[in-house]
Length: 195
Image 1 (tube, rainbow, N blue to C red):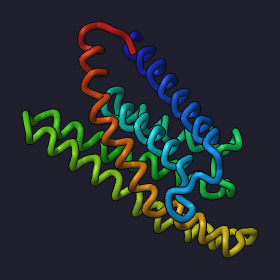
Image 2 (cartoon, rainbow, N blue to C red; image 1 turned 180 degrees about the vertical axis):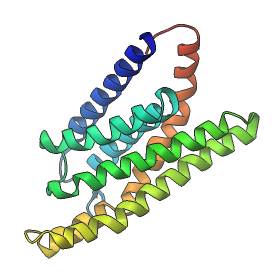
Image 3 (cartoon, rainbow, N blue to C red; image 1 turned 90 degrees about the horizontal axis):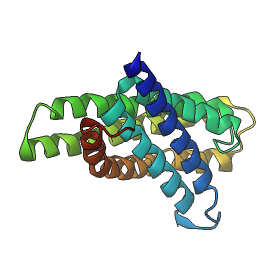
Image 4 (cartoon, rainbow, N blue to C red; image 1 turned 90 degrees about the vertical axis):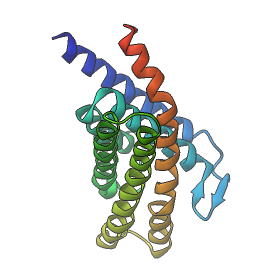
């Protein structure tokens, strides 16, 4: 019973932090653009969300990460901080779940290694997870946008770019931050501190 309570608590905390990250990104002025429609807001929000997904995968487990990834996409849409067209919300949720699954699998494999091999496996996992999530969204979002009659060509072009290479950037950033944050979190859990 204690393990289940810890899992629920940790998952809820990570989900709450994801929602805070989504609102924090909205505080950045809309004109703060990095390249094309890729904005500072997307960089901050996406990186923080992916960081929480990496922590969930690396510390709490696969089920927690998938839960946080799916619920964060749904709640963002319901709270008005998600995509303009809610029809792409399931794709975002699935992209998050894919990222978590790849990170979880590669992190578990890396746990069996030591030294430089462990770090290389974790870095490889972050790169692979970012690439797979990016490819999935880059392929599926334009397809979904093509099925929505209300989408104007300019909106489709902007959203297609937002769900292409910027997804790799934010997933890589969040994953790399996760590699820094996860070891101390795991150590704190082993010494009896709670999270």
